[in-house]
Amino acid sequence: MENYTSDSSDNDSANKTLDFSYLSLDGDSFTKYLEDILINNKKTYDEIENISIHHNHFELFPEPLLKFNNLKTLDISSNGLTVLPDIFKCCNLTTFTARNNNLTNESLPKTFSVNYSCRELNLNGNCFTEFPEQILDLINLKYLYLGGNKITSISRNIGKLSNICRTMMLCSLQILSMGGNALTEIPASVGQLKMLHALVLCDNQIECLPSNITQLKHLKSLLLHKNHLRTLPPEIVLLKNLTELSLRDNPLVVRFVSDMTYNPASLLELAARTIKLHNLKIKKWEIPQTLTAYLESGHRCVNPNCQGVYFDNRVEHIKFVDFCGKYRIPLLQYLCSSKCIQGGSCYDVQLSKSHMMRKVLLG
Image 1 (cartoon, one colour):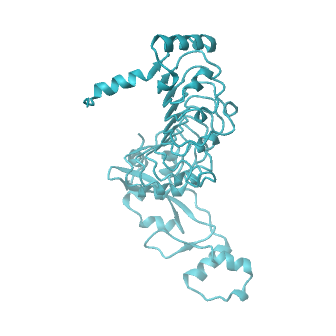
Image 2 (image 1 turned 30 degrees about the vertical axis):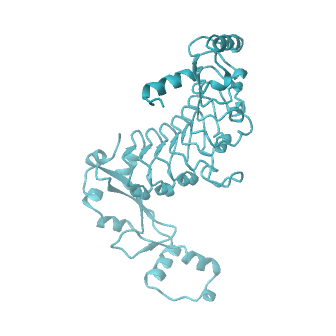
């Protein structure tokens, strides 16, 4: 029995690989070139597992590629590609890369064949304006790259139960990269991607994050720079494995060094607060049903030294909190009164604005 070495592995991989990159090929020239290569090297379609065909001139997907039934990796980046067939129907690709083409949402088939083998999909630098729902058919996808497009929203079906295979869509996803798009919000369904290690959302137009981001227990990297963030959900401090948090070029720094203007509470709010604070017993039939519902909608002040409640009127206050033992980040608090701020730490009240800015994680 022969010894298995890394060299033999490399040679075996080389024998199963075809590299057509940087050859200025188009559809017609590729067909002839491919046939010559296979004949001269005495190879068959079924022997090939890896093909690199990037930096050529294919506007349409080369049909001969669909003959490689055992293809595992395919890189067709930087070709000006405008149409993509259901490539997962013909072979069990594990890695498909089509960066820097001209693909749009109309370029894809209506659905991809349900695929259990694909682990990595890279569609960076194309022209998508919507999240391609077809990607959700790639059940075991681990690495998804959709950066540098024009996508305005992330699918709300991501992380939800599939009707086809009865498993969570993209439940194995570890990297979701969507920097450089036109996102304005992140759906709560992203919080269902429990295996996520890296979430790249930089260079978008995001104004807030969902509070259930705390469910991403394995998250290590969260890139949020160059957005429109003004606050962060307090739950973010529960991400104990987070080692990289990028916040630079967001308006939150300016917003967080000063509190918002306080508006006086309405008479309704003041009356409701009095009832709650003094625990006054009111029978439901004694007041209109709308007032009963209003009394039940109260929230306790988060200041541990305060027993107050609030309803419609609240004070939004920024508290700088230790995070991961390395940084102090600004988190949004809801308080019942501006007086509750006085019970905060010296970082909340006494630090000058310039000093507080230096405490915000920017990088």
